Amino acid sequence: MNPNLKYAQMIPGRSWNHNADKWKFPVIIDNMMNLEMLFQASILTGDPIYRDIAVKHADTTLANHFRDDYSSYHVVDYDPATGDVRMKCTAQGYSDDSFWSRGQAWGLYGFAQCYKYTGDHRYLNRSERIADFIMSLPNMPSDHIPYWDMKAPEVKDVRTSDPVAGVARDASAAAIMASGLYMLSEWMSPEKATRYRSYADSILDTLTASYRIPQGEKYGFILDHSIGHHPAGSEIDVPLNYADYYYLEALLRQSR
Image (cartoon, rainbow, N blue to C red; front, top):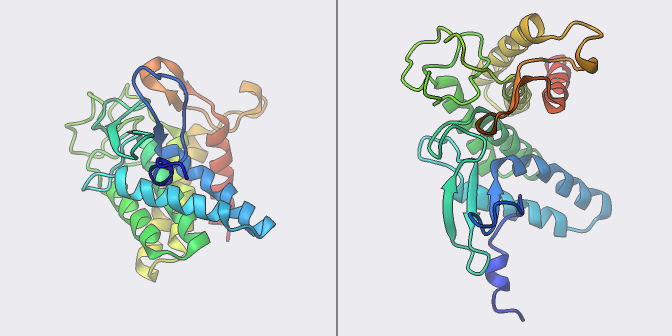
């Protein structure tokens, strides 16, 4: 047996091959969204190996990706030989210790989804904690569409929900949050379910009223004003296909 196999089994799925001079085995919070395919693969094939991989990835992310306040890092880099964490940092957020909005949304949604497939209350609790963290941010704009990073320089010291003009919002993060909150609300107490659904309703109301693209414009996209990779100057204030996807999914969940 390969002596490194036991260490390799401790590491979740690798995310990227680029920046090899900086990272050895980078894993991003976004990958939580991919686990549904593995759970479904086990359901469809009857082979538990895919589910086991998904659970291992979720457990390792649970252990290493989060701070004490339940905010998450974007990237955790592992040593592939030992499984040790080498670095916790960002790629698409403002800084290593910032609250990159789409990353927080990926975590909220991803762990709710893991609970859906496993019934493991550790995942439900983590999703709930992330939701509460997001909703308690003092600088969250009153319309609940987050800034691209909630600790961007212009807003990190803001302690009011009055929107700060000129700071990019991220409709994609908002749509993911809304869909995740509707899913999470299915397993909450009536009081908390109402709170989560009301917050998600507010997001959808704003997206529909202020972020919809007029029919026939911008190549048929639905939502405008999303952020891809702000630090790289890529996809700034544009339509993104995954914003549209989770917006439609959130609308479907709202109607149930």
